[in-house]
Image (cartoon, rainbow, N blue to C red; front, side, top):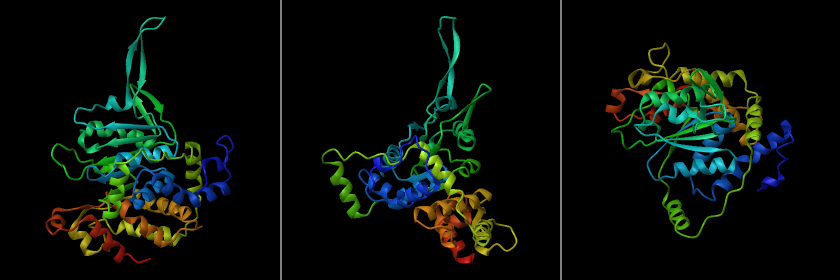
Amino acid sequence: MSAPSDLPPSSAPLTERQIVELLSTARQRLFAEVGKVIVGQLHVIDEMLIALLSGGHCLITGAPGLAKTLLIKTVADVCHLSFQRIQFTPDLMPSDITGTEILEDSPEGRKLVFSRGPVFANMILADEINRTPPKTQASLLEAMQEHQVTVNGKTMHLPEPFFVLATQNPIEQEGTYPLPEAQLDRFMLNIVIDYLSEDDEVAVVTKTTSGKGEPVQRLFTGEELLAFQQVVRKVPIAEDVARYAVRLSAASRPGREGVPDFVNQWVSWGAGTRASQNLVLGAKTRVLLHNRTHVTVEDIRAMALPVFRHRILVNYKAEAEGVTVEKVIGKLLEHVKA
């Protein structure tokens, strides 16, 4: 694994060729560094890296105690990003996130000074975002979409790169406020963290009950991540592959001509245009991480589950029959041919 000192100095702009070379090894290097702290969960790390290099936000769903917070903090350390954790609670106010104006004494007298909130960081952990009311959830909408916040008519830009990684606890539903569809759609991926295998859990128990772990090394800077994002968008994609991504999204929308019967039976709301965009963008990133040069249908299919998981809403009939959104996505992949 290359050490951070092998990278070009951050003051020297990377060429596209250097960026492609770095991206081709980024996946293995990130696995190695994050693996010093986190055991297993390779698909989670993989999907988080795709979102970061694509410039997208993540919704991370998992039961308590599966190291969601530790994973996000470790990735922020490896990528040399400023990090803030916001614990979402029922009494959290929008100003607790964006910041507020406070009265301060100065030689010229008292004046209002804006005190920045925790949203002014490169990586935001919105912990248990569904525990706060919609008014406070909505305070993140402008930040996620425009990378800016507006307070008392003044617009302030957030530091770049800017990522929101929000966690949800799927077990406890009492006293929670499910995210509205409009805000869910702004998350590029919905990543699910599941329980570890027995061997991985033994490794976790052994590691966390012994001496202090090995510190992680910083692999990238924020400037390099921004350069990576620009190169990702230049990856070529054939029209028929892009068309497949669009047809896959369109097939999830009930009530439309040509939609499969199981969608009309089980789905109340399908994936929109952002889903098609994120399928393609995620596939482009995946291509570079796997050291390839062009997007294939298999790359689109590999991104379907995390992209669609929070955008396709199943109805009561599906729930009564025990049909999950994952099953619907699987049937979509079987139905829509390249």
